[in-house]
Image (cartoon, rainbow, N blue to C red; front, side):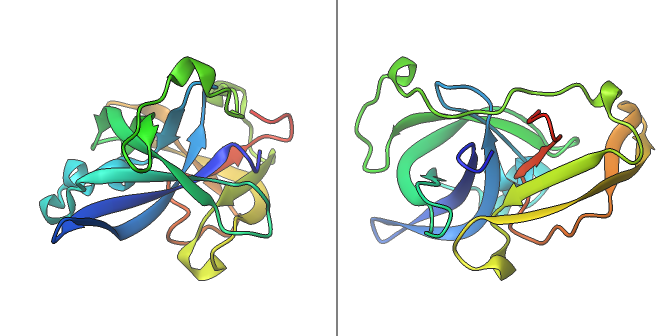
Length: 180
């Protein structure tokens, strides 16, 4: 689960240099580089913040749990929904823009679970990169404490949890004990 959690930087062109402007988390959901994250991490413009449309997205992988992630790749938005605040991004190149063959990446990933199988009281494991957690991956855990409905989404639009989750953790991994 740790190695399937990534850190994402929104990069902005400042005088010809790409510099980080914001940070979030994501979860690898396929070996070839698909990443599930929040829309406000992939592109804040999708949720109504047009001043923070990034020029690029950088993806950092965890090589060691006691070290900061290694930023090795760039990614592009594949799908985004500002209403649901969800996005899928795909690793498309090396950090310096070099080409990659995504079928050869063989990245660690987490299979998607079925939220209809989640129940109040189920244990949940949270991984991500909250800004108050320093530069390394952070783990918290808790239990599913309920559900929130939302028009156009349904009765289980959102899972509530008693786990501690801080800013920067957005888009990070929430997994069952079975690793889904």
